[in-house]
Structure formats: C-alpha cells, structure tokens
Length: 193
Image (tube, rainbow, N blue to C red):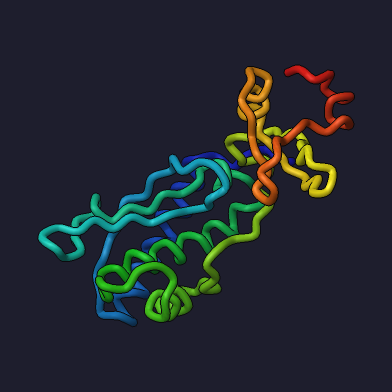
C-alpha cells in the first residue's frame, strides 16, 4: 500500500467538495445549509450524518449538522476519491433530507432523490475493502452440539470459550444439548488460550 494522504490535504478536498455541494443544493432545492465535519469515525463505516433538532425542528446551526468521516479510509489512497465523490454527498443528502423532510428518516425516496442530485449513486452501503480499517478482529473457535444426531456447528468468541473453560455451558439452539469444542480446534490451540 502506498503512503497515506495527509489529513490537511483530505480536509481541503472535503471542504472544497462541500462548498460545491452547498452551491448545488442552493440552486436545486433553494436551500442553504452548512455542516461541521469530524474525522473520528472508526471501524468499517465510511461516514455517518447527525442532525440535531431544536424545539422540534431541524437546527440550522452549523455545529448541529455533523458529518462524521472515517479518517483512516479517507487517507487511504485506494479509497480516498470514492470517499470524496460518494460518501460526502451521501451524508450531506441525509442532512438536507432531514431539513427538507423532517419526518422522513434513512434512505427513503426523498433522501435518494437528493443524493442522486448531488452526484452520488444513492446506494445505502459501501462495498469497500475495509480489512485494514477494522477496529477489532474477533477470533472465533469451532464448537458443535454434543448430541450426535444433531451435531450442529457453532463459532464461539474467545470470551465465550474462556467462560466454557471456567465451567459455563452453552446449549444448542436446536436440541438444547451442551456445546463441545471441536477436536480439530483442540489440536490447533491445545485446548487452552
């Protein structure tokens, strides 16, 4: 992977894109809005939007319209342009839709029409490769139902596995028999963590 794009460059591009989108919203929707952008979103989400209400109506204060962006994804050269061209209009469309249609939530018809007018695809979710940006990778261990007639496979987290080692029992959802660790898994991890 090539080096990260600097945060200052990302912020300049985000602000430039937002200025362009604000003008576009003003022309198409006769609507003036501004947002605060925060870069502290983590995990696999590329962006989210938060709109605050005051006295039952959407607030026009800049600090009450917040777009949260995943800084790691924004700085990733493989995702950067997609974040600027797709995620920012997507999240701004949420804030605009919240102001124009305060009783509509999510990815409905009104949001989609605004999102499309701002130049994004109008898709609800992204399909970016986010393996490098996942906050936590949870290891799971193989278990199965102890009833030989059922023998349904299960994956338990390390936390649940450690509880089993301390005497806790987990039951099969189908036949209510106890779960046991697979022999294959016992060989690879030695039965302990």
